[in-house]
Image (tube, rainbow, N blue to C red; front, side, top):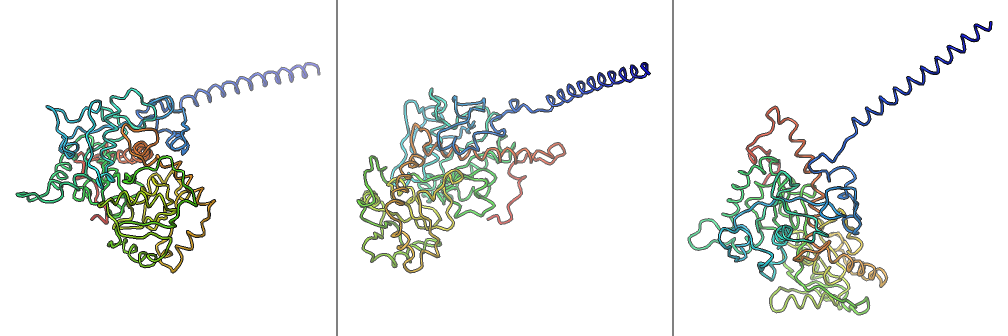
Length: 471
């Protein structure tokens, strides 16, 4: 009996030992397998695009609080957007501003000269100038603090490819035929641009999807836009584009540069702004802008409303500056297109914008809540008798002051400067482009799925399917 008990004890001990050994071997096996399959995103050429990137954080974009999880930085706090910029001949950019190149130089030496951009209404669509100047400055600046984008010389290192064509000033200055011309300079440069781009290895590599093309004036790039549509457009609105050529998913909406002076040291308040509602500009417009005429006849006789025709001539900008600063609310009504510079003039004047434009898209709206400092009114509601005036008259001192204070907090997002400063309009546009990069990379990688079996053509533009509602 004692021998049987001893045998059972021996078997039990042997069972415990073998079980422990088996469990230990499984643990080490599973541990080694887990280490093998964990992904190190650091080996990726653009490792900043991994999950957890500060790109997705609103606080890192606007609040000034940045994640430090990304090892590839322009400084200790923020990731960097790597931009390859074509060295296009000066006729596409600074020569349009009457800048004269020296020798074979393509670009001005921005450390010693800053080419002048024409004033007046030309300035409102000048984003091509500011973004190009910022890239040129990124190569010479010793202080990269607050910078979102930096120029790189190797296109394979770049996140995006920048096309420095000053399309808006080209339209404004060169859209009319000159003596002896069969095509305007504006059209000729667009044709040359398309021919240049589709011949580049950078365009062929992505079919243009990672290219940044600027067409902020609604009539700029009119001929080329239908050929360059795979690229990311930077626009003022989508009013004159089919939705498959330009849309909010693919493209970026950038602010106009305001033409009224910034309101520095604003000490006004609800009581000191005597005018309730202000509008000065073109009244008789086509398309969706016909609402301006209807509202004019509804509001012109109201004693606390200023609604009049105005232009930049005859001190028009000075009059608008004084009028907006003396008003509680400023009307931003759809014109020939959904957007207008008037919104950004109102922001610069700390006059609470009242937006009546059903199709408007707004800059940075994926990270900025415009309802905190704007009043939105549907077009159909604005035309109801008494609706608009009742709405704004019922916004009291406390609510108006809250929106007015918020305007002063966010106004620098719409200021264009050189050199650019932290979270000004230039850096905010680069951030908006940066937020599109993961989707661009995803689409380019998706297009590569069948490249080994002949699914990816090297013919660039010609290989891209034309949108169904193209044109």
